[in-house]
Image (cartoon, rainbow, N blue to C red; front, side, top):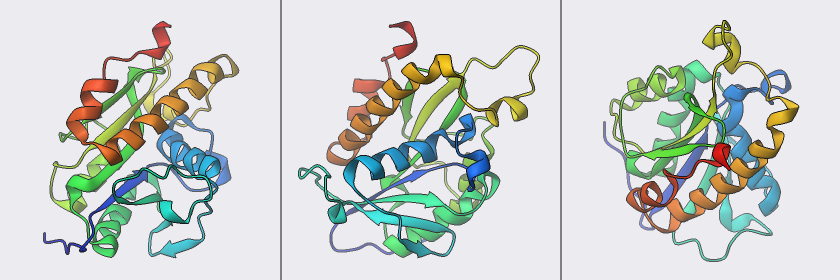
Amino acid sequence: MKYERKTKEVKVILGLGNPGRHYYNNRHNFGLMIIDKIADRWGMDFTSTRGSFVYVYSQDASRSPKSLNYEVYFCKPLCYMNNSGVAAKQILKFFGCSPLNLLIVYDDIDLPLGKIRFRRKGSDGGHKGIKSIINFLETIEFPRLRLGIGPQDEGVPSEEFVLSDFRKCELSTLNEVIDLSISSIIDFVNKDILFVMNKYNRINLSLE
């Protein structure tokens, strides 16, 4: 699959989740939640729609950092999690960027809440949203930011657990993870995937 490149390099941040208020606070929507928090803090509104996604441009923000080294777009899918690849493929075509500059932000049941982990590439790890993206982009080589939502409740099927909301007792850690994730995304934009892997993959807020 070939992708057109723009003159100025672009980085795109895509947060995965299911559309609709019913799903918003679900663990499965953690990636989408991060994108919304960035938009809220930077004074950005998702008013631009293109096919299966909505997006904002960082330079249009009223409170965004002035030191971003790339053109940065933040995106949310309008399709359901299992069809995330539809949005990802349209995003690469629309912005003319490489999969290597597309950061996927999503929940990971295998990591505890309080832990985040960057990866350069890899399999879907059982995550259906990532599986869809791999299928549509026909590559496993795109960076990811995995957000821990575990541990899974004993006796609760994974499909049910990921669609549950975060508990009140988890909100303090959740807010810390949101702050950490936003900082890490800024570093990803200004640096590279190896830098953020080395800086953030060892942090575990659940132990603090």
